[in-house]
Amino acid sequence: MAEASIVFKLPVERAKIREFALAVGEDNPIYFDAEAARMAGYSDIVAPPTFSVTQMWHLSREEREERLGANLDYARVLHAEQEFQYKRLPVAGETLDATMRISRDVTKQGRRGGELRFVTYESRFDDAAGEEVLRALYTLVQTSKDPGE
Amino acid sequence: MTLPELGSSFPERTFGPLGRVDIVRYAGASGDFNPIHIDAPYARATGAPDVFAMGMLPAGYLAHAASDWLGGPGGFRRFKVRFAARVWPGDLLACTGLVTKVGGGHISVAVTAFRRGEGPEDLSLPDQEIALTGEIEAELGSSVGEGGNGA
Image (cartoon, rainbow over all chains, first blue to last red; front, top):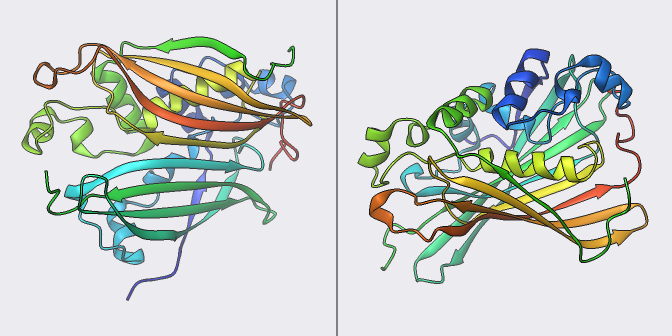
C-alpha cells in the first residue's frame, strides 16, 4: 500500500557543503569559510543552491519507489526537469525536516507517438522552527514501451 | 553591483572539459550512484556509447555561473532547468544568461547551457548543442534572503 508522503531528515553538514561545492566547481568563499559567510550576512557557511540533491544519501530510489509506489520502469526513465523554490539557503549545522510526495503524475501523447508519463517528486524542507526553507521538484519522464520509431 | 538591463546578457561562463573523475566526484557528493554515469561497461550494456554526466552536475555548474552573475546565491527564489541533451566526458559546458525581466527588486534570467565537444565517436554529435535550458528568479540588492541566518 503506497504512502502519501515520506518524512526524513536532511542534515546540512559543514564537510558535506564543502564536498558538494567542490563537485560543482565552486570557489565562492561563502561555501568554505565561515568568516567570509558571516561577512556576506550568513550565520555560517551556506549550502549551494542545488545542495538538497544530497537527499539521495538519506532516501534511496528503492525506498522512495517502494513507499510512494509510482511503479516506474527505470529502464525507460529519464530526468526531464528540476526546479528549486527558495525562501532562503540552508546553512551549516541545520538539520532540515524533509517531506516528499508525488505532486504530479500525468500521461501525455509523445510527439513521435507513444505515451510519455511525467512524475514529479516534490520535497519540502523545513527548518527547526517549522518554517519552509526550500522545495525541490524532481520530474522524471517515462518513455513508451514501444517508442514507435 | 550595477543593475542588469532588460535584454542584456551576462558574460558566458565555461566549465570543463568534464573529466570522468568530475562525474565520480559528483556521484559521491550527491549520493547519485546510478551506474550509467560511472561504469562504462554498464552504460554500454544499456545501449549508451559511454558514461555521461547526471543532469544535476551541469545544472549545478549553471547555478554556480548564475550565482556569480547575481553577486551570490542568497537572492535566489526559483531555479528551474529542463534537460535537453546528455553531457559527455571531454565536453565543455558553456553557460549563458539573458535578462528577461527586471524591476521591483526582482530579476528573471533565462539560462542556457551548451555542451561543446566531439562526444562519443559513434554518435556523430554536433560540436555544440543545447544541454539545458531554464530560468532563475532572484531578489536583487539583499544578497542574503530573509531569515538567512538560519539555525
